Length: 442
Image (cartoon, rainbow, N blue to C red; front, side, top):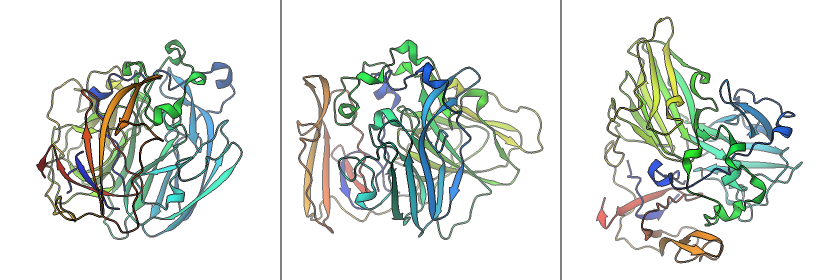
């Protein structure tokens, strides 16, 4: 296992998901993110159940719908194929796939394949790798699925807005040679605002490009506006139970598409973390009654053996408003009765991913020769419209590029000068290896 820590990093070959903690996000108000327009909502179709699309040619449509989160809350959302999460794309390692995206939304859209190594022109970043797909247009993404694992896709056009409205889905690449689990479930975590009309929800006045490119002027420091936490677009009793049989091997693919970290507790079973951000771990050890902290953009694959018949929970721990409803039942077929109870406020240890699994010698070292070296001093400053996040004192697109050639070895040093803010970084199109952190060798 290569330790996933921010420090001096090497750009090698796909990005690790962004990571923010609940504490670090408490100060950022995303209240303007999920707008509600009742007069339009009445005309929208209801969101359907998530479908699974297989094969080498996939068709997606970006369109509006109404999402019934629980028995009380229904919100207008953006979808891929009419569901939140969008359709799961499930392909075989080595397949060359074509994904046709038709845009039926009232605004431009794209798809970014988060963490996946695709050709530059397929990466889905408007104004950088492609033009945004305009309303009524269709674009075809084409690439070879070279790396197996659990990934996700989402819009990168005004992504702070469109992802928050539900425009994301999961992308699973099945390995050529691997014993499959008896049950394979994907769980996507997110947060919503139950009464956006009462939260001064008005998207029209917001400059989302500023949010993506460094400005925080649209954020008023109150993540508590998010009062509903969901798994696969549902909350509380609306979440469909996971069925298992005694003796089965169960794989759970956990994906965080929201803005907050979520600490997850699997009741009644030992489990192993077999992959992080799509990458397999070496010799993972059993874990019991510890919390797995999944940060925004991250993916964890965990496996357990169904050896404890009854009804159990996978639940989120914490004290945020929506925490209690972010839980899913694990039900043994043929078993009756509830053998478990929620304990979301219990203080349990958190899995230390920096020491989990057996360490594997990385391909690169801190002191070897690199073709390109670049230092990123990360900070915050006051801009003309409010606080901004900076790299070497500048915000995008004024930040200096890292100029490289094919085959170059690149070392990037990240230094956080902000007194309180974390700065999670997501590298597109490449894997990277962490070489050291806080001046100490790892």
